[in-house]
Length: 133
Ligand SMILES: Cc1cc2nc3c(=O)[nH]c(=O)nc-3n(C[C@H](O)[C@H](O)[C@H](O)COP(=O)(O)O)c2cc1C
Image 1 (cartoon, helix red, strand yellow):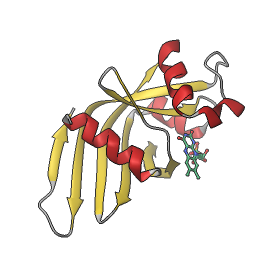
Image 2 (tube, rainbow, N blue to C red):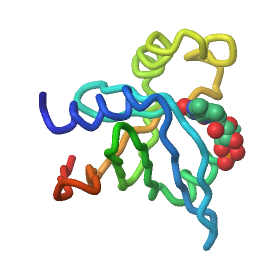
Image 3 (cartoon, rainbow, N blue to C red):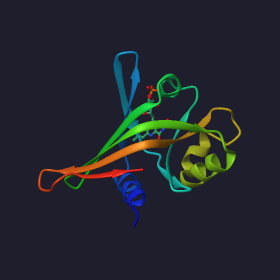
């Protein structure tokens, strides 16, 4: 398994992660679940109408955190918008339940990928493991 696959697999298996953005000098955090590995990039999904999308457009710096089986993962970096239809389709195909609310052509569905990212796996029992992608 490559390094980015390891990060993807952890977030996929954790099921829920928490996404932090910045609004002015105020951190904002909320639960997220969508995660997709596409062309060796780590993608998340949201709606362009959401506050989180507006915050990322103004400041792409973000961090996600997930905890599972005694290990936590933090991924920080920039979340970059990708308007390619094929990625939106791949995301919605992975999460068919989202098709109630979103479609690739609705002008709302948004996928973003991590750029200049640093991922750190941590636990109370082992040294931290850092991965850059
Ligand atoms: C378990 C769980 C997973 C979620 N996953 C996502 C997701 O992947 N993308 C998304 O846009 N919203 C997701 N949501 C909903 C967001 O947390 C919610 O819309 C939040 O209010 C968005 O942040 P904002 O209000 O700052 O825009 C999820 C909610 C829960 C409870």
